[in-house]
Amino acid sequence: MTIRPNLSRLLPPFCLLAVLCLVAAACGLKSWPKPNAKEDRFEWQSVDFARKGGCLDISARLKGAAKNLDRVLLQLQPEDSGCSGCPFSPDILLEFGPGSQEFTQSDREVHLTTCALAPNKAYRFRLAGANLYTALGLSMSGVQTSPPSTP
Image (cartoon, rainbow, N blue to C red):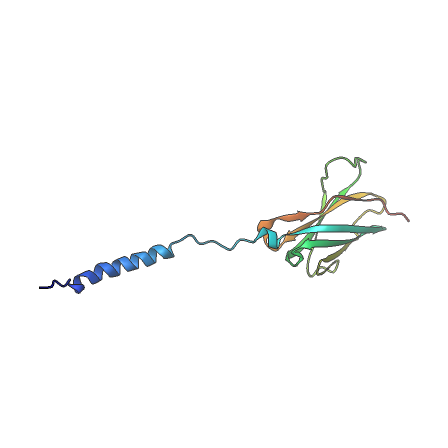
């Protein structure tokens, strides 16, 4: 004599167990994808400038993921105190980005111009590149000094 289990009694608990497993698997932690800092970051490789009157013409080169440059912030500090060794403390912030006629980007080359400077003043400045991935923060160039314009 063989004993056969009653399958109709085992089916409801089995189905309940299967549904609970599926629900538990679907309740996992979900989050937005995070950028890969090594692959998505860029840095300022070089920054060159020329000054003519009240205009500052800046050409810069990026290294890394230049395609992720969203916009450039030009931080300016008039050098009134003559303290070139003092910490950089920008008073003026100008934003440049796609659609701005004073800004162009071609692959790794960035060019921007501002004519908002007083011709007879020296300025310290720095570029801050904003990444498309805001979690990566800003990429800062070194601080440069632009002497007063010569007539």
